[in-house]
Length: 638
Image (cartoon, rainbow, N blue to C red):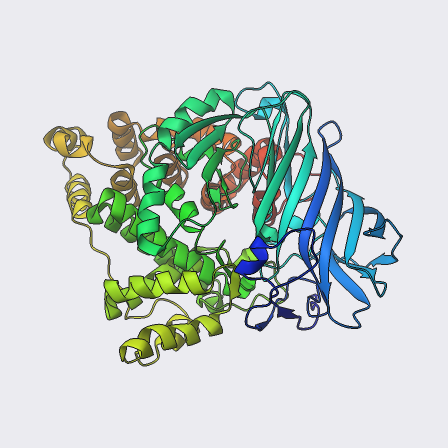
C-alpha cells in the first residue's frame, strides 16, 4: 500500500475580510492560526499559499479538452523558495510570474488517486504565478456528454464534479478543503451554449459564447464547478432560480418552486444567507450524486424530478450546505462529518419548518434505517473503524468516507445535543457557531472545544460522560441515540402487516384508499423497505399489478422496488431495471442495485451485461466504485 506524503501542516490564511479585499492586491487577513493534517494534498501552505485565481479557459468539445491559464495571487512566508500545487494528469505547458517571466517547475511522480505535486520555484519578488495547461480527455472530474446523452439531444454537454479531490484533474490548485481562495474567470464555449460556474452567473445565452464569472467570497477547491451546454433559466423567487435543458426547464421550475420559502426558513434558523442568490441546475442523468452544493449554483440530479415536489428534501440539504460546508468547512476529509452531519441536521430543521414535524420525522426514520444498514454492512466487512465520525483516511481515497456515517450518525449526534440542551439553546449555539467561524475551516477537535466552551460551559451544563468517545471516536450507534417516531409510518406498517398476513393487496388498497392516496413518496418507500424479505413470484406480481412499482416515475420508489426485483428474480421487472440502470447515473441507486445483483452468479452475469451498456453514461465517481465491485478491467467492453 502506498504511504502518502508525511503530515502536512495547513495554516488557514483566509477570513471574512479576505472576501472583501480588492482581488488585485496580494494581501491576506489571518484568522486564528489552526494547524491540522491533510493527507490528501501535496501543498505546503505554511510556506506559500494561493489566495486568488484568475482563470481563462476555452472548452473544446470536439477533443474533450479544456485549454486554460490559471493565474494565482499567492501569499508566502519569508524565505519560501517554492509553492506546491496538486495536479492530476494535466499537461503543463508553461509557468510564469505576474510579468510573464518563466519560472522553473517540476511535476513529481504520480501517486494513486492523489495525482502529482506541481512544484514551482519562486523568485524573491514573486507574488503571482501563471500556469498554462491542458486537461486530459479522461480527466476524472469532467463528464463530457454527446448530444444523445442529453435530454434535448441537440448539443453536447459538460459538467464537473470536484469533490473530494478531483478539482486537480481540471485545475492546478492546492486541493484541500482547508485552503480558500477567491476567483474570476473567462470561459469560451461554442456559440449557442450557456456556461455556468460556482459564481455570479449569466441567465441568458450570448451570441459569441464568451462568459465572465466572479466569486468574491473565498471557497475551497472542491467547490469549483463548471457546466456548459444547451441550458435555459427560469426565476422562481427573488433570490432563487432554476437552470436546466430547455425540455426539462418547465418541470424543474415547478418542482423547485418552493426554494425561496426554504431559504427564508433557513435564515430564520441560523442567520442571513451568505451567498446573495441560490440557484439550482438540473444536470443530465449521469450526474453521480443527488446534489452538489457548489456556492450560488447547486448541481442536482434529474432523479429528484418526481412531478409532485416529494423529493425536494435534497434541495433543503444542498441549501443547508450554504452554512455547513460552504461557510464553515471541514478542515480535511477525516473531518467530513462536520460538513454532512450538520447539513442533514439543518436539512431536517428546514423541512420541519416548511412541511411540519410529522413530515420531518419520516425523513429522520428513513435516515435511521439507512444508518443502521450502513453500520451493519461496514461491521460485517471488518471495517468497524469506518463507523467512527472522526475517520483516518490516510492512504485511502477520501471517497471511502462519504457514506451514511458522516451524514446520519453525524445528524443523530447533533440531534442528541439538541435534545439534551434544549432546542432554544442549541439553535442559539449553532447561529453563533456559523457567525463566528464564517469562511473558516473546522477540525473535529476544535469543534469539541468550541462546543464545550460555548454550549455546555456557557450555560453551566455538564458534558455527558463518554459523549465524544462514544459518538465521535467510537464505532457503531451508541445506545444513547435519539429515536425518531413517525405516526404516519405506523399506519404504513399496519398495511404491510395486514398484507403479509394474507389480506389481498387489492382489498387493502380499497379499504385504505383515502389513506394511500395521501401517502408521500416517503411512506411508499417505507412500505417497500418493510415488505417481507422472502416473497413469491405471485406476491410480487400481485403488488405490481395494483401498485405499478416497476413503472414508477419516482426514482426513490423505483430503486427500492428494484432491489426486490433482483432479490426475488422477478423477471417482469428486468427490462425496466436495465432501463433505469442505463439512464440513471446516481451512485446512491447504482451501488445497491449492482451490489444486489452480484450476490449470485446469474445476477453477476446480468450486472456485467448491463454495465457494459451503461458504463459510458456514468461519471468517474460512479465507475470508480462499480469497476471494483464488478471486477471490471480497463478497456473492457463486454
